[in-house]
Amino acid sequence: MSADLGASDLSFVAFQYQLHGVVTNAMIMATIFRGIIVGEYFYFENWFFETLDGAHERFSFYSIYGFAAIMPQIWTLQTQYLARYPVDLSNAMTIAVTTAFAAGNIAPSYYTQDGGE
Image 1 (cartoon, rainbow, N blue to C red):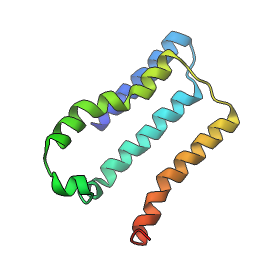
Image 2 (cartoon, helix red, strand yellow):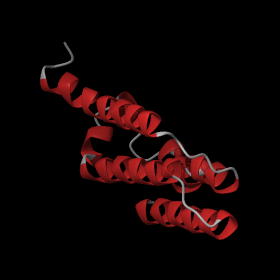
Image 3 (cartoon, rainbow, N blue to C red):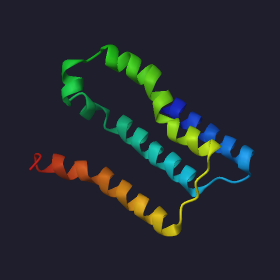
Image 4 (cartoon, rainbow, N blue to C red):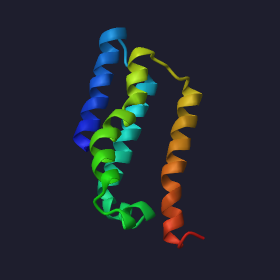
């Protein structure tokens, strides 16, 4: 799955460049953020199976169809849209989005360290 998501996102980066002659910072951020999330999923994959979904459905329709068929299409919608309709964010907005992503990405580790309190 990770190779498919990475290849799909990079192909939309190339498509945006082909259509518009430039790759916007929003496209770069979307591709990097998704790469981080997918990389973390595979690094912490055993954590998924400790969640409610993973504990009750070890090898189910959700796991098979969701990860194999739906995730590559749904997760690339953002880069598909940005390829056709490029958005170039201001420096302040880029910093704000990156800060929000970092805060949201780091927050779960604080809750798991202290038992959710």
